[in-house]
Length: 284
Image (tube, rainbow, N blue to C red; front, side, top):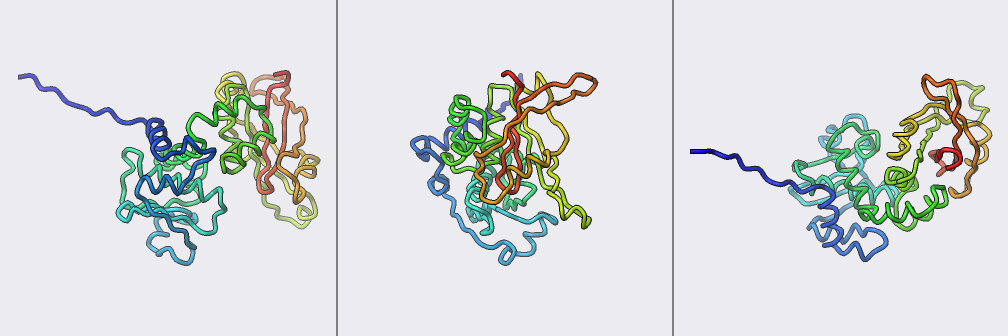
């Protein structure tokens, strides 16, 4: 007698995204309504101060990082820290939805901290939940189609972030990740200042991370190092400056093992706590 082993076809995350968006009525909206999505899934939502009210045993599961969102499978509850701003709250809710519906994520409780919710996380389940959350936030393929028909610049980031109720950083990342064109997003962070002399000068902004479009990776590079020129910092970081009021300049990049400098058009802009730069090959 011959014995065969059966296996099951696993639903792909993108299929789940489409199903959830369609069945919860999101395709008829410009931006995702998290309340409708949670209602469709039979999940309740609460917001409270995690520092004051989250049980100590739950805080210990995330080490030194601050817990920001959680989902209790048994109670069917999603919760977020009340200290989060509106855009981070929306993303955190969708991140927890990812844990709830993705295959193999079944667990009694997830407590997600600042690191787990950031692009820098190395935890596979957290990465998967964040990718799923971004797909929901930007309504599947709709954002990619729209952003690829617009210029790659700060003004587009502002317009699409407003339309999709997303953060400027998440929107800029998504534009590059889904771009058919060669482009890179460089995100800079303010570096700590130690001495008294440094305190009297403009802060230094160093590279936090880079995101390159598929064609940019293939033709050029995936990451770079360096700092924002001081004159650019002075221009784009004054309080109250609009994110779309950017600064454009040409920059030279020397590739490893190549003495020749390659020219790129760079657009710098800021949301006050990050500095961003879109890099596009000159002449493209």
